[in-house]
Length: 169
Image (cartoon, rainbow, N blue to C red):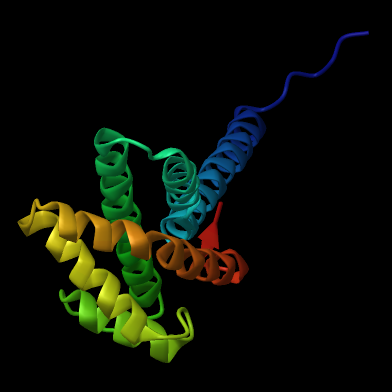
C-alpha cells in the first residue's frame, strides 16, 4: 500500500514546530544558566577563611622558634584580611554601603550582628597594621599573645557566617 506523500506545507510546518521546540529549549537553558550564574555570584565561599583559620590554629600550637612565630603572624594577617573581606562581601550583598576603612566595616558588621563586639575587631585591625609597619620582638610577642583571642572571635564569626544563606563552605 502506498502512502500519500505529505504536502510541502505540512512538512514545513512540522519542521518549524521542531525548530521552535529546540529554540525554546535553548532559551530555557540560557535562562537557567544566567539565573544560576547570578545566584552563584551572590554566594560567598567561606572555605578559604575556614582552611586559613585551621592553619593558623595549627601553627600557633607548633610555633617554637622565631621562624614559626613569624609564620603564625603571617597566618594571622591572612586570616584577618580574609575575615574583613568576607564581612565586606556580606555587607555588600545586604545592600549596605561599605566604606574602605576596616573600622567602618567592623562597625557595620556589629550592627548587622555578624560580630558581637566591633571594638575587639578594631584592636585586631591595629595589630594587623603593626605587623605591616613594625618588625621588633616586642610587637611580635604582643601579636602572638593576642592570637588565641583572635581565633576565638574568628570562630564566632565563622559560626555566624555558616548560618547565613549568602555563605557556603
